[in-house]
Amino acid sequence: MLRRSSTINDEDQKKFSLKKRWLAHHHDDQQQVNNNNQNYILEINKLLREYNFQDWRTITVLVEINSNEYISGKIINIGLNGCLSVQLNQYSNNKIIEINVYENIFGILSDNAPPIQDLIEGKYILTKNPYNKNLYQTAVIIEKTQEGKFKILFQDQYDILCVPRQSIRLFLPPWHDEIPIDWNEALYQTRLFTVKKIFNGFVAPVLLITNSELPIGVYNTISGGDSTLATPGTEIGQYPANPNMETPAQAFDGNVNTKYTSFGRCKLSNCRSGSASNNCGLNTGLYLTLQRGATLVVGLQLSTGNDYPQRDPLMITLEGSNQSGTNLTLGSSWTLIYSGTSGLATDPGRKKPGSIVFFSNSLQYTSYRFLIAASRAPDCSVQYSELKLFGF
Ligand SMILES: [Ca+2]
Image (cartoon, rainbow, N blue to C red; front, top):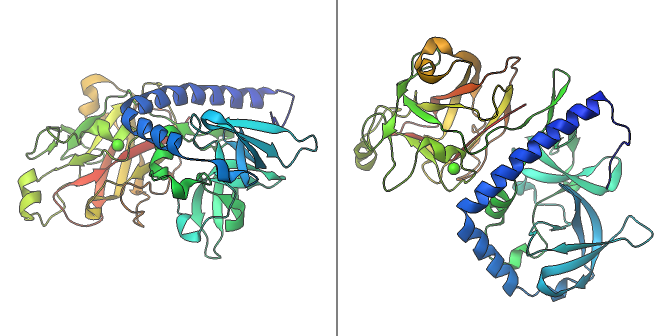
């Protein structure tokens, strides 16, 4: 496909093995996500199979030619069973790509510049390659500038670019308006993204969580202090587990419809009576040991829960440890890596990702502890639907 270089030096080799490692995680994650959301995927399949694509012939679109690379072309044939043929604009020999949209629902995308209100920090998009105007690549919006442009980070490049809205495309097929599914949710459930950033000369980071970590909830715990373990239930220091599963694992299942809720100093009855006037969910969180072993974490991203914006974490800490077992309950085992904003200062809406927060860290750790130091407003708990760690 479109490899940029045919020679492989050490640096390339390093990138290649990072990519391979990411692909392995990606595969595991995707299996898991699909298993967890089988009904939703089946529902999407059913709606796609009922849709008549015939009117889309001759429409200009973006078609996937490589993992997370798209190129512009024109739909020239609508076959049976979801097979669409797209003729690429770039090649004089009329190269044709076949995409089965039943199997790859984001294989063909609309080639229109998106409305500015859809372009929020942390959103995964496609951005025009600066050296090949026909090629679009996966990127993430890092920041919206005061001039109305967008700082973006390509998935497999090093530099942050500033681009206009016209260079951006969304992960939305041309027919998204006519098929009634939540396309953002479908994207989230069928694809996982990573971003890379230059760090100490290396190319990083990748998404670190494999979905098989066993996060342990804590409360009454501050950075540097000993952990008090949280337990399932609806009382002080607990998190709901029956009938609502709002446990620490729900923050790592790749699904924004599930969340981790911590009552901290409150209990469920305080939520129901509305009597909680203090920040009960503060000093709660979790720690976990990464399946992939010692890892350099350089960024994180939180997604909001389905309701109660006041419960969104606003100030957080992240600590690392190379100890294990019950030693991880000791404050002395943890080293502070980051203390600051959560990426949710501007409310992205419910069940939405905040900005990715990057920080300096030069040490690898096998375990990480994440704690909430402030929430958007006082409430009986704090909650978040996803916590992603990035690094390498
Ligand atoms: Ca979740």
